[in-house]
Length: 185
Image 1 (tube, helix red, strand yellow):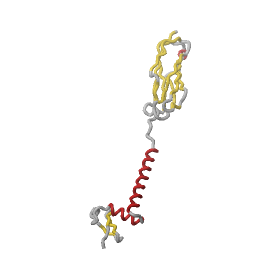
Image 2 (image 1 turned 45 degrees about the vertical axis):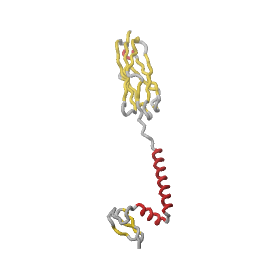
Image 3 (image 1 turned 120 degrees about the vertical axis):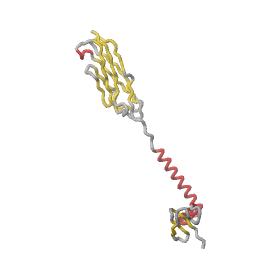
Image 4 (image 1 turned 90 degrees about the vertical axis):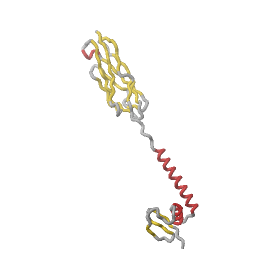
């Protein structure tokens, strides 16, 4: 009686349904792949050709699922990133009577929404406000800075003040804008 044998991880499956132990790769049948297909076909009640088509269709389905899963994942976008239109600004020479203001641009050059967490200044003579605290990627908002010379009781001379803008930018959580002014009487 001729016997077809196949090795799967060291166990020989034979057509007479007996199990015999052989070391992996030492099957008297040689290349086990055709025998594995044949055994699977017998087990499922399919001919060799139907089993080949089933393998082909299953492989195609797995490939489509893999492509679909890759297509559903999004590449990580860079976080929100803050950029100011200026790092230093000089108001020039001003009288010690009236406040002066200038509006600067705050831009989100990152890939995610940027949150402006807070704005502060180094002295009460200078105020700063942003128009919007929520900046989608590519959007810009105004940062209005005002210097009030009367806050120092009419004092004259050169002054340097700093505006601090804190944001959700993980690389640069705080940016600064330096303001210079010369106050005359």
